[in-house]
Length: 345
Image (cartoon, one colour):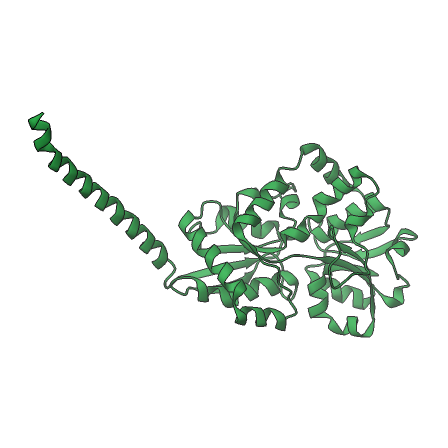
């Protein structure tokens, strides 16, 4: 009993020493995480060519986010188009640095594209940093084509310009053809949205599908002069700026139709978002998410977004990650039925 009593101070001293080591280690870890980005460069890889919505939002984030990351690293935007964003997704997931210095911005249809040949990633395993805004694609035709409403595209074949077969602009069109009975004939191979717009101007195609933001920023004169008619918007609800344009999610006549459309149209909610590799350390994910949230609340950032006509609808990384996990968990039966539409003309 006496011996135990004499050894108690020694045990207490040992415990105190151990506690001090743990606290010190935790403090050093926190300090290390906060200091990591000092002097570093963070690459923001954009899954499209210049001048489209992907590019606008990727560069918008690159211009501002470094101000909110401890150590003020340089953020540098770089275009990496290819295969409807598969190239940039594969790069961030498999090749780029896993330390929080490589971010990507890819197609909002990330959960569908992962099922395509050549895709080597799992959308739910990316570390999602945050969404800048939602995405709304629109199909529009030159007024001189005689196409005034979506009903006109059900009466005759309509040539529609698109990029890769894996582009959401292509598979959303196939979905609408298959489910709603439109008669769009895809003309594939255009490099990006800018090339599609030129094809429409040259008369190579009668209609194109791009992001609503792309049309507003790249061809505002078309809207002001009424040069184009907007036939359809893609999503499950109407964009507030397009209250009179039918939305693809309304075109499902049965519950099975609506489930199929949900697979393709949930991209509107995923939107334009930044992601990092699955192996990115948790403390750096936290730093990037905190910086992203602060950036989207910043007046200078908001003014820059307004200057390029980029509406904002931010969503924090944790909620976005859960949204993508929920979408990825959709039943195989529903997903397989929906994906069969991708081979329909």
